[in-house]
Length: 164
Image (tube, rainbow, N blue to C red; front, side, top):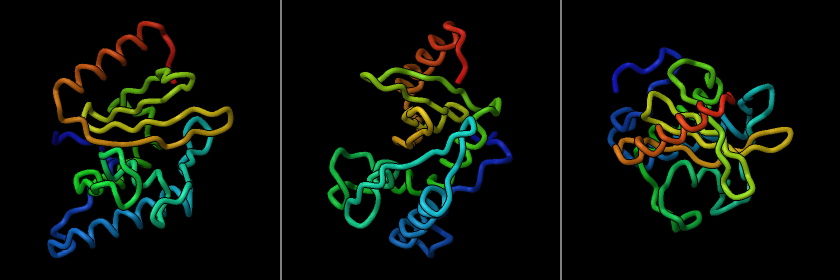
């Protein structure tokens, strides 16, 4: 995808760190820390918070947006593609009303989840609380089967006429 919106920051580039993956991962942590701990994005005039439960010296939410495996903390395998796009999460939240973003709400168990899908390529999922949102996860969506599933969810939500 080359038609990214102007408001989207450049993803972190391994070349900017001399090919050092550890340096890129540290930079992704600094970005996450700035975007969600030292400050907070807002959606619909409500703050977006994170799961601050500590796991290996970092909040659990950080591990969810930078890795794919189900383990916790250092047992999780970091995904460098996710690390490179950590800087997109806050930007997407703050531009949820942009035409490049498909937004919908789905139930997961007893909880509502807001889905923000950028150009059908990058998804941010937020939990809904009465006075705030909680970052659940974020990841790229390159697989066609996943895109088809997300499109069906979005279309179904649109039929109901509600817009988050």
